[in-house]
Length: 287
Image 1 (cartoon, one colour):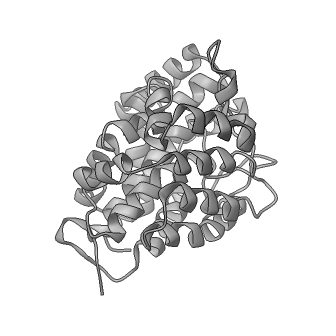
Image 2 (cartoon, rainbow, N blue to C red; image 1 turned 45 degrees about the vertical axis):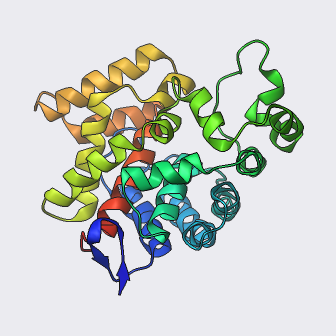
């Protein structure tokens, strides 16, 4: 038996639960705009996410074993990318890596994850940048004057990181106002832990709970990936329509079909769901 955070007991290791969380996240349906077990894109299929989850597990295991979070994340991304679609779960792995590290220390709580984040180093930031060399990630252009720290430069940006002494926590804080995953890093993963409680308190198949909390998160705040990839207006529309689904005024499956057809992908919301599923599994949710 493996002891998880919060006093709960799991039969799986943190790395196994992280892999399972990725699998359950993509299996949940409907999740409007996202790949799930019933909907996919021509170049981004359900099977790619399954392969990405399996490939990421060795890197996640490093996080649980005490490896630096940045290094574990970079290795997880490298393994995830070992399938033909490339980037399937970059943001989810960025959510999971500090959570798995905290769980490996037996401290899966908001305070425990804050300690993991606060302990990150410049070397962790460098590994985060190197992870962008494995996959294409949709990001905004950097503000004027910040071009040397554009994450798309990968390793070429590392000397500037070192010159400025920026840790991975610093990098996340710099993006927290425009990126929902970075915001979780700086806020002690508040939305992740709150959502995990809702997953744990719900009933029914865990993948169905995942699709429900996906809609709840989507209705609560604009998805920052949609803001980046599309525009704020589209993100606001998706938020409004997710709320309409919860209110019974729209059909979730019809909205899912429409958003896939429009190529509108609320990826940040899916990333947070993956993190919440991991916490819920560590705290005793049974599959």
